[in-house]
Image (spheres, rainbow, N blue to C red):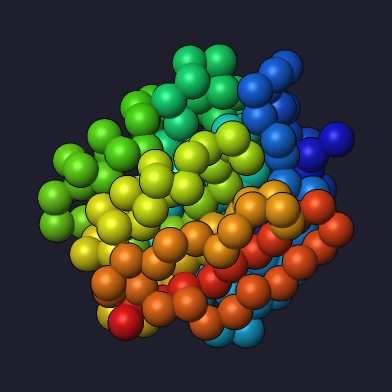
Length: 190
């Protein structure tokens, strides 16, 4: 079962696609958001969730006070699930003016980043399929780097057997943590 851990939508269950995704465990999601909150990067943030799957990472940010969340997922079934989960999370705000703006973009990550224009994000969360090539991940990170706010944070979640991402000019690694089969790499604008 995947659920929102904390915030306005805390404890709400989220749907997950029947196949093709690997939801981030509650333990790892809690570690991610503990880090982001300790850095002051959740409340009021603009969050980009790439390879969103069910949307659990971005929707957790929305529940915890992010102002705007963009979920990018190219697979139609997963994008539909992310849209349903978005409606569930927004329902927890009861139509109040404090509800975040959440959008689901059904397109490839690289296509989205290449067409993002002058957007600026405070937090970028990348949880690609484990079989995504290192070359494609490097291209994603290179396209993402100029779209980040000055004090932004970037998270890449991969298999603990994967090599560290190839960080492009413009991104500097700051931390690596491992949780069993999951590795988290953090970076910031250089």
